Amino acid sequence: MATRAAIIYIDGKGKMSATYNHYDGYPENLGKGLNDHYSDDFNAQKIANEGYISYMDPETGEIEQNNQQDPETYMIDDLDDAVGKVNDVAQGMGADYVYIYVPYNNSWVNIKNQGSNTMLRTLNGLLPDILGMSHMGSEDDIDMNESYETKWQNFLNENDDATVRFEKVRDNAYRMLKQEDGRQVNDYVDALVRQIKLKPSDADEYIEYDRTDWKADFDDYISDKMDF
Image (cartoon, rainbow, N blue to C red; front, side, top):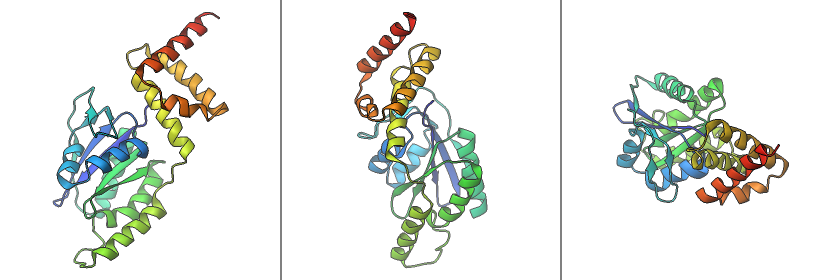
């Protein structure tokens, strides 16, 4: 199972664009890539209009696309409409994380999706400041940024480091072994999950694996399984 994400950009005229990201959608990977390489208005809008992204390299910002599809686009009428449509996109894409571009300080906020009710409460608290809707006509940009940062810390779900490392191992396994038999890969990843739960420190070794390492470990697992 991949860590999916939704990448959302809302322009000044109320048009919302959303792109689906399939692998490694957690903040340590996709979040880093977005903030390091797409944190200006032009590139934020561009990435949110890709439609489908398989994987983003956090170091270079380069994307892999195994499928082609149009972005989801909507016109936003007001704040309530924005909250509802962002939530609909998050749930419809099965996104584990939602990334929304923050235009006034050129950054991305990420929200962990823990279900529709929690997402709606989080969006109701964050979107007014993310989109500047609660500060229309305000000339005090510093206060606006402080308000946003405070609410971000209050509403943003903290990501336990062990959980992030586990998600990275799981996503890397699926991504590197996507050419193998899907049922065998699922069995392999299930075994990997059990191993890491018993010994969490093993995650660090798997994080360093390249494609060759993954293939060798997978082949060993299949070979051992067939011996029984």
